Every structure is written in structure tokens, then in C-alpha cells.
Amino acid sequence: EAGVTQSPRYAVLQEGQAVSFWCDPISGHDTLYWYQQPRDQGPQLLVYFRDEAVIDNSQLPSDRFSAVRPKGTNSTLKIQSAKQGDTATYLCASRGTSNTEVFFGKGTRLTVV
Amino acid sequence: QQKVQQSPESLTVSEGAMASLNCTFSDGTSNNFRWYRQHSAKGLEVLVSIFSDGEKEEGRFTAHLNRANLHVSLHIREPQPSDSAVYLCAVSFSGSWQLIFGSGTQLTVMP
Image (cartoon, chains in turn yellow, brown):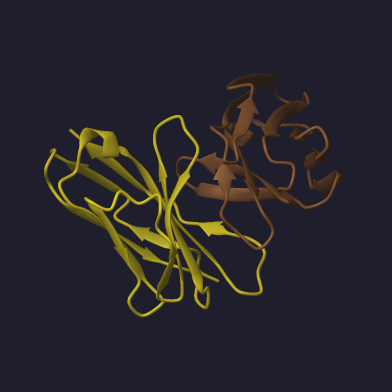
């Protein structure tokens, strides 16, 4: 079974630029999560979906961040006008209805200079 | 708001010596606890999930949960240099599945 796939693996931006991250969850998993992990910290939840619906986006900086999962499968996280403080690894994770575990992708490491 | 704290921040052990990592949490109604390992090239790998007080063993990894003391630990038996990584504790509530992570312990295993 393929795991959670994320792309790109790395991104380097200048402040003010936009970037999109893509996630392909494990096939059949209805719940998808996006986490932000700053250097030397644990992952922090940004947003999560069940199928195509946003369940909780209270931690998503709504002025510059957006996330969609239009068909309940793949998802895209976008940052408009990136700031240096957005430098972090962005992790996608998924979970199936009958599964008690959350499986993570390898992440996208973003550097904003 | 649930807070999860891990100690120590970093730990160096010799190959074959037991490694012990600690995690404290603030909300005793939490009932799902997990330990993850994070290699930079491999992402997060779940090692042990524990849902009730006591001990849970998965190979060389053993988790101990004491909900009354708001504490969960991870013990790694016979650690190897390949176990060198960041170890993350994650806590959640039943039915929530929102994982709240600690900041991690950087483990280095010396040959």
C-alpha cells in the first residue's frame, strides 16, 4: 500500500511570493490533515478535512493560507505572500474510517528568505 | 488547551544501553497516546500507541502510561545508531483524532 505522498519535498521562496503544496493521502482514507512543524518544534495542526469538508481550520492563518480538498482525495495547501515566519516543514497526514492510526507523509520543507 | 511537554530535549546513549524518554500532558481526560519517530528522510513513523494505563510493548519499544500522574514514557531496548532521530509524543482525545505534539527529544545513539 502506498503511503501519503507530498510534493514538492523542498521549496525556497523570497518573502511575498506564493507557494502551493500538494498531498495525495492513502487510498480510501477519508480524513486528511495539514500540520506545520517549525524547526525544533513539534507539528501543529493547521486544518483537517473529512472527505471534502473542512472540519477544523481554526489554526489556519486565513489571511494568507488556504487549503482545499475538492473531491475528497488529494489536497492543496497554498500560502499567499509568504513571510520568513512561515519557514517550517509542512506535513500532510491521513486516516481511514476504520483505522485508529494517522499516517504522515515525508513533508515539504519550506524556507522563506 | 492541552499542553504536551517532553524531556529531555536531547539524549545521548551508547549502543545497547536502555534509552528512556518522558512526556507529560496537562489534561487527564486524554486517552490516546502515541510515540512517533522522525527521521529527516523518512517522515514520521508511529512506534507505539497506548490507550490505557500500564505498559504496551512493540518490539524494542515499550510505552508506559500513568494517566493519574499525567505521564507517558518510552523505553528503547538495545538502541542502535539507526535509532538516532527525533522522538515525538502525541496526545489526543477519543473521537477527536487531533494530535497534539510535544517538541520532541533528539536521541543520538553512539556506536
